[in-house]
Length: 445
Image (cartoon, rainbow, N blue to C red):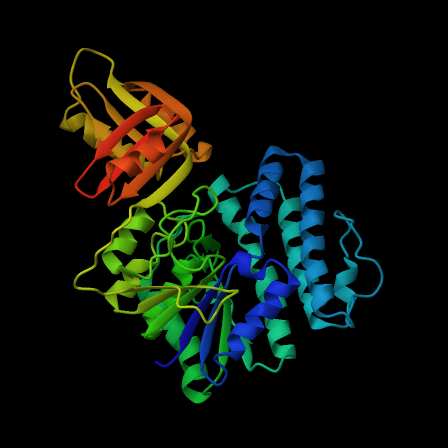
């Protein structure tokens, strides 16, 4: 199918100017059919996570303050994009009032935003009944609907033939909240039913949907994991059998290190699917870990480009028979915890112990970033997510002695040399080091 799949991240639509820049990019592809995937604006997901935390802790004052600030952030972007369509009256900061003044606006965007924030407000007025993970997906999934409403109405106002689709009706998943697994058969059928007619019958049409979001068999919202909008674009590309998917980022492509902590990183012009999967798996934040596999399976080329320099080449990820690199690639994961598991008696760590440990890791959905074992201990480095880690440790303590270090960083260096290792270890205490032919892991404090 001749459709361009574009994903725009939160950094590319964090302001009214960012939304206008999306229009400038799309005009470069005028006349082509496009499927757009949009993330929540700016740091909206972070704000919703804080709102959820206040909600779960019963801190109504902080929750209302965060809610009000988030609503005002989106309204300010909407007002700037639609200066002649302000909602009537004040943007009332009341939270517990059942009627919000936005709902009476004569402009459909402001009415929609009013309804969406009203929906979020109603969620937050209910007593927490679901577990944290399901509550997370109910609350945090709302962010993408704010951004898609704003972008949809602005594109329509600019004359683009755009149709808005609800991602919950396209991306079908199981009920693994916060990290849902795709039901590929149901998703393929839903996408064929809703999208194929649009693009087959209307050349040059634009579809728009939310990233990061799906729904389970009961229709409850699910999310695909943090930064999951990339994965949404890959799912759509795979199911529509497109030739290319483009992810628009706030960096010029895939770099050999994050410029936020690494001076003078180098852009990688090309990557093999295999290398991209390795980088994503080890924590490279520019690509969601699950994004590459469906693209590789369907041989769909991935482009990662800078949204402020759309004419630049960026990075191309594709099937390559041979790929060489002459520079190390650095990946940094913060907020790590190293858990060391030891038998309570004088026995060794044996297969039965490891089987039990891995069963618990799977049960609590804790991903091992690095593992290492000796005769009398097994250590695992993982993201410090208290919702998952705390109950895991309590369960492990029933059978083992547990020691753990918090506040660590994990550095992974692909295609390392000794200078690359020294660059990371200088001035840091190395807690764990693990080397293979092409990769070194360093857990440091």
